[in-house]
Structure formats: structure tokens, C-alpha cells
Image (cartoon, rainbow, N blue to C red):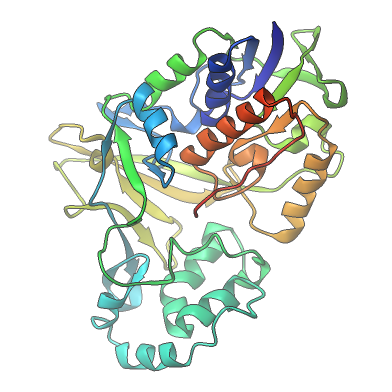
Length: 383
């Protein structure tokens, strides 16, 4: 029986445990610093309402990944969700991605249309500002992107963001149906407690150490110290930030955090039908609001809204900057055969979501099954 250590009990960690157990022949230990599994995807309750830390609907273009999760955590499709952005100078809500139909409603539509005829394209874009102005022109960039991106990443200049292919949600300007990701399978669990049952199913059969921190790492020898005991494993799968495995030897990796506020309103619904997200692209501190009922279908005469404010509180979003990505790559290069780094933190990629975590875990298991244990860092496949 081979031994495996999985570090971190979020979606990537639980999916990795499950894939190893499904493979057979592995004695798996999962270590999680929090007293529960699921991390930010775990469903909690406030005012009688189920919620997660930020919206956690499931999106994928990989049917095998969808079927896998649906088997262990039955899903129902969400076919009609829309994202709206509030544009204060227009005192109007418009769809996002920016939609052709909305331009006709804008007070400066003639100037916008003229700019769209003259956009330079993105071939020579060097930063986020270049990319968006080259895609949609200065006016739409100013309305939808400029202030939102600055507060999202706590920056004073969007030119500091020099990776940007992750930015548009599919397209810069959208035509046709207004659903958010038209080509994706979009879903949410049937269960009132969301994905929680999956975390228990995925880790059943593993040794799960909750509320436990690893005290010391010797990654080249696949060795760690837990509660003073030195333990060596045949395989390590880490889903935490890779700098932690090497005592920040190349300096700490930067992240942006979030302050998360829960607000109960005395009405059955606040948002219009089909609207799940409201984004705010102006001077207000918050980036978006989420009405959780739209996902959970919870029945109540009140409704729960989640508000997200960018901060340095926590490590939620890896910075989309080449220097930070290069630093993460230095850590990935230090990882020997038999050590994998997965998930949003482990990959150090902003665009990693639930489906990517599962896909990465499956790819890791296939590589281990095939006898190869070189360190892969699979990326998001479709965003």
C-alpha cells in the first residue's frame, strides 16, 4: 500500500483524495488547517439562509467533470442566470459581458459606436488597459473596466496588470442570448447544504486531520512534520500556496483578499428575475453583490445578500502579473517527482474554479496511474 499526503481540504484537496481512493492501492492522509472541509465552498447558514463565501455555482465545458460531480453531489442546471453591472454616470444597469443591445440605451451611444469602428485590436496589447481599449474603446473601458479592475486588484493603474487573457467572460462585447456562459454547463447542487456532502463522500476512507497544521516541510524528500512526528510519503498533493512548502525562499507570493458581508433584507427577493450577480464599476468600495436564493432556491420571506469588498484580508486571488507568476514558477520548479501542486492556490492561477480543481485532480491521478510523477500544473481549460 502506497502512502499519499494531501495538503488542504478545499475542493482541489478533496477531489484529489477521492481520485486516489478510486484508483485503489493508496493510504491517503488529508491535512486541513480549518476545523471543516470545503474551505470557501462550504455551505454555512446565516439568518436561516444557506450561503458560501462568494458565489459558488458550478460551470464547466467538460461533460465528464460535470457527470462526475453530479454522480456524487446531484446537480440541477442553472440556465438563465445573468450578470448586471451598475454604471453610475448613466444611472443604469447593463449586462456583463458588455452587450451590443445595451449600447443603444447608453446616452453616449453615438460616440461609443464611433470608437468601436476605430478600435486598434489587442495584438499589441501590453497590459489590461491596452487590452480593453483595443477591444471596446476608451468610453466602454471607462464605464465598465477601469475603476472596477483597479479596486478588484487594489491598484492605482491598470497598466500594472500585464496578463489579461483571463479578463473577459468569454468575449469583450457579446451579441445574442444574454445568459452568462452560453457554452458551459451551469449548475448548483440540489442539497440545501450545497457541496458539503461531496466533501464527506470524497474523503471517506482517508485519514482526515482537521484543525491541523504542518509544522515543517522537507519537500525534496516528500517529508513533513505533523504534531512533532516526522512522516514521509510516496506522493504529496498540495493545494496550498507553493511558497509555504519552501519557507518563502523566493519571497512570499502576493494575493488579494476579501472582506465579506452578509445582509438579510425583509423581502422575498431583491434582484430582478434571472439576475444572480450585481457588479459595481464605480467609486464604491464593493465589487459585487450576490443574492444567494438565486442559486440555492431557498424558500423564505427574507433574502440574503453577500457583499464583497477587496482587501488584504485573506489570500483568495493570485495576482495576474508576470512577476508574481514567474515567482510561483520558481517554486513549482523546486518540486520533485511525486509532488503535485493543484487548485487555485497550488497552481497560482486566478482563473481556476471548481471544475478546474476536479479536472486537475483527475489529471494528477491519471499521471500517477500511468507511472509518471513529474510535477504538472494544469491550468484552467476554457476561461
